[in-house]
Length: 515
Image 1 (cartoon, rainbow, N blue to C red):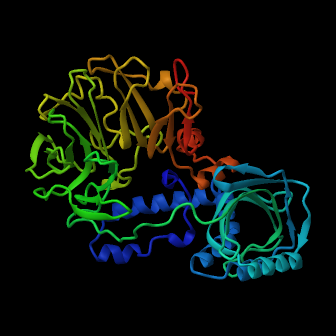
Image 2 (spheres, one colour):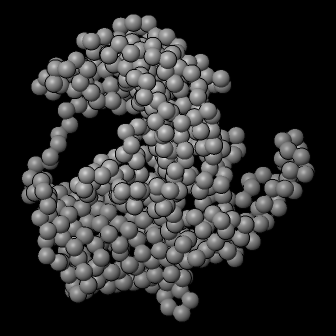
Image 3 (cartoon, helix red, strand yellow):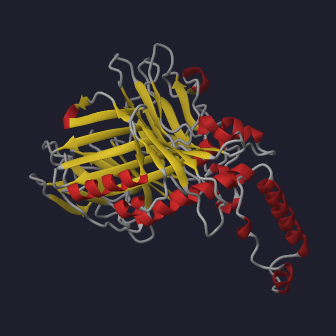
């Protein structure tokens, strides 16, 4: 999504209205139309120069996109692939199969396999269909493109085909890169690109035989409460210490009580609370040793005290009034950050791109969203703002998706990690008294990403805490990088493109940092 600031547009997407008709309607002034015309002229210039190869890449990928669209619309995959005008299909040579847990097997393909003609492909497709294989879902991603200067153009697609065979009680995933060399034909709106040679030798096959490991206990279409668009967060916990977990839909104000044997009965979580809220967390803020419900709404933060039986029958009280309207409190985390025996709270917000016409800027280090807050507990659940005094002012305007209080440096106090879109991970070390120092650059070499979520765990079993940051990749960005296409006015964005679009990052904990 970040590339939309400087990506090309098709010529057909030009302004629908003439200057005269808009002016006569009184919608805009001539000066504004001149500015729009100048922007469109720049787009056309870039499309014919900077982005020329990207537009060609899109023309070639259209034939694959149409296959994907038809599959999504319910077309028979075997008939659809049988009509694909390919001449040669290069298969991979299966390598020794690895046996994984849960009866899963993994087979990697390599070069050295046979080549198939179109006729052989169609025979194989018919055989697989007659055996009972069905395509459950698929992805087709255009990740690299090589323009045809001296040779015919070629593409690399990442594909993922999820296959099920109920007759044989087997299911598998065929995934990886395929290389497509295209036929030498003129591409027009009526004539799609045609593959000449497709190389499948870099695919993997993952298979499991047997019944599915999980089966659905319940399928429901749960609507948000009036005035809300959220039903999450999803919270799973054992409230009444009976050894069975309950399920909470926080913004829905609903709990599914566990009565055993898969019987879950819904009821209102906080019967006397009907405010529209946008995030919920559970902790003992009131200091009585019992879990409370903490919710975040437009006006601030509400507390509904819990009872020892796992119910929340009381009235809500506003324990912190926001100085300005809270708009999208995506992140809430609690913990005793000043070692005074009570739980404190951090919450931060998300801001969508294009809100009031604004894009995150800079795209790789955006700090232009809605504010986050560090709120200190007085011991009875009342909160006060200490964000600036605690050293968290500088990055409080991140567009955040998740956060945690956790001991990052093994000094027995709670540090703060915040994961944000259009920036990545920020790590703040605690001095033990609730004062924080930004240690991001000291603890992580590359913290960039479209940060979505995170988790901690000892993933390599060496006794040290590791960190995984969930990010987003971009196939378009990867394709631009493969062709070395950079926008003339946003080179600094291009230089961070690979870091931003890396996807998930797993950082292993060492003695002094995450690596």
